[in-house]
Length: 209
Image (cartoon, rainbow, N blue to C red):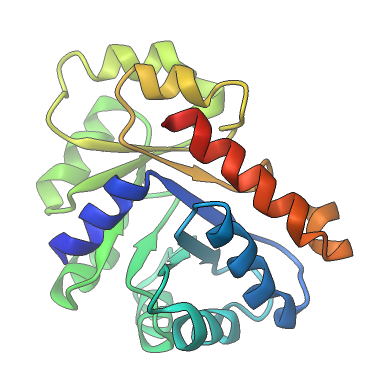
């Protein structure tokens, strides 16, 4: 499990696939962001065909990419995505049962939190990373303030992260970033413009490096 966390920390960018999408596009999408340097991807559980997409990613891209699931809000969902091949789970909230289930199954977990109390509760449950959400609304100054007293716990900033603000979040100590619609752009996916998606992924990698 530790190696999964370390992979996320090394890569720093988690590409988030969410919403309606033709299932067969998941592999070319993954290959496009991987070509751009992003090798961690999650599919959210409120996306149609999520289990099939995770199975496809795990089977065809699992040796090159770290595959995870997002919006994992129940133990049932956690169990299903793990069976499908997810190696990490992410959620917008902190469900102690989900955290416990993931850790018992040697799966990395990044529960969602916002306040200092919620963030520390995640740490007390045994997770090694917290998803601070919605980061774009809270802003870099908020995270900088939170990291004053809580500076020994890795934060994945998610929600509203884009090319214009990612460096600000990096500079206040965020360890990783969950990036959805500003990276996995619906128009690029709909038209199969994989070259443009590769370039966009490369732009994000360049910004954090």
